[in-house]
Length: 330
Image (cartoon, rainbow, N blue to C red; front, top):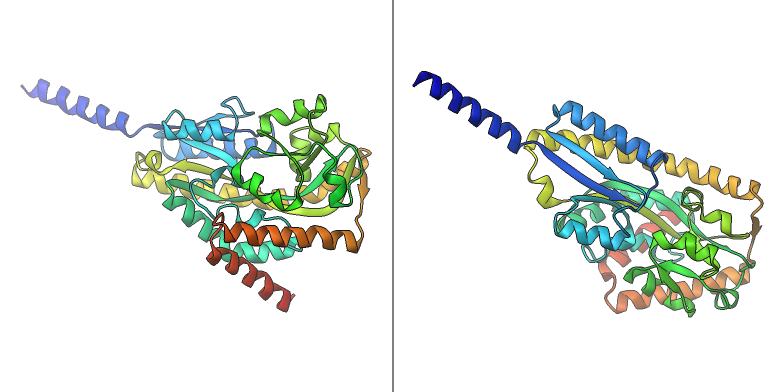
């Protein structure tokens, strides 16, 4: 009987240990070998070590799990538990998640950093209410217009085959400029540029280089169009399956990791702009009158998005308040 009791105790112990071993499957469009993936793999290794392999992370990089919408669908059925995605893909989880990406809402990168100190926590809290745990925001930076023909005026954009992300937030944001966009998932854009399905894109310098889109364009309009960012999210359901102590370890490591990625991206964007110029892309500077037209249309469009309920008045007023506060102290 004593022998049987010992076996029973061991089997219960082993069963308990097994139930607390969790593998989190995370998909991303970021290609393997990029700085982002290297840092995330390093974080995953540290998490596995510090939790004695009770928490493991398996990555699916380079879009092998499909575009962002596909990845989020797979998360809903628990085929995946996490994703690194751009903000625009997350609007169904939190209405104001894309508030930073309203066209021309920011005037400078210093202004962005000031506002983010006030508002990042609100966005992360909103995503949590929607069922997703975010470990921080990492900027992709200001998006610029990259094209095969010079674009200074809005009228010139309207004559191009311009790509936008295949998300509701992107489609709504560009309506103010009154052009007919070509919505495509990120995974299809390089081929679309190569086949001339599109000839104009708007993306940050580091993303254009990482995705090799810069090889298909000739001009960059030196006018920050909108601010973009991405985040790593894991479903609340999956996080709740991890032991409390292990969850704290995992959260701390991933948050620190994302802070490092965010800071590195800020440095890399400046270097990437210089790299684009060195690779022969011609930089075009709109004049003050042309910029004023872009901003006027953007302001009208942003206000309309709020009026129609795509963003809340509370968050829109708050971001404008913080921008105004920064303008007073800068």
